[in-house]
Image 1: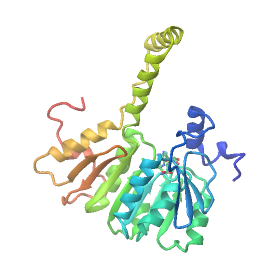
Image 2 (image 1 turned 45 degrees about the vertical axis):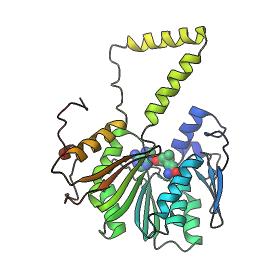
Image 3 (image 1 turned 180 degrees about the horizontal axis):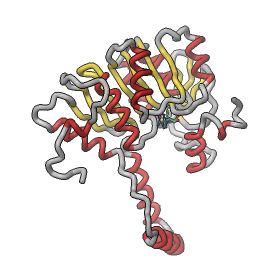
Image 4 (image 1 turned 90 degrees about the vertical axis):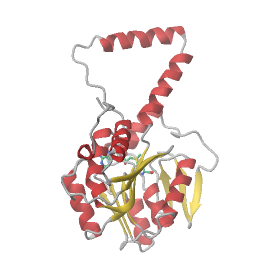
Length: 293
Ligand SMILES: C[S@@+](CC[C@H](N)C(=O)[O-])C[C@H]1O[C@@H](n2cnc3c(N)ncnc32)[C@H](O)[C@@H]1O
């Protein structure tokens, strides 16, 4: 696929980012936004331009640094990554974690040639694999793919950088968390994006001219008068609350620890046995105090 026809192909999510933020870099050019690891260049951004030795990674430099640290803490691990995009994080994990197995998946149907070449050039075909047309919300597809790729062995680390939507993110959690070994880590990226977005809207409203404020007020009034408004989507924060409630449950050894950081919402797997298929997070707690009502 060439860059000319990409908007119709594998890069719908990157095209959406471009539509939102324009053609320039998504992130302002920051110090350290180009790094080199083992002869491979990684560029923070969202352009479609990865090659086998020069990848775009959709993260700010501080996030890349944190990911490198996480990867080094999981050397030789069995890792599942949701969300490949331009392949930057997958290639970085392959280099920094030297995983026993790295299974990366993306909803996009088209293979990313740059990543395939990277894997082939470095002789990583036995340990790193990329799978396309895989929806994190498809329990059967995701579960059987991971079981097949890992020969049923437990996962050490899951990194979910895919849809960032509550329902699909919870679904893949319910598929993969039971497959984590006790002590294994499940990390969900950009969990606070809905908050950041709303904060930015509020900030820009505060700075808006009177004319812009009047326009926005008119748009809000129109939206409020919709007789059948779409139900507002719940943010990923709900999942954070659900994990805290699962940790709070006295007898539950399902979630051993919940860690909330700038870049990740993380849950560490407890020792409780879980059914491989059909488990739901909602079964792990009672919402006694109505946090999720
Ligand atoms: C933020 S990008 C991933 C960035 C990449 N991990 C990195 O750091 O460079 C999100 C990716 O998730 C994929 N995605 C979105 N929804 C998905 C879903 N339901 N299942 C699987 N992948 C999905 C998109 O196609 C996109 O490539």
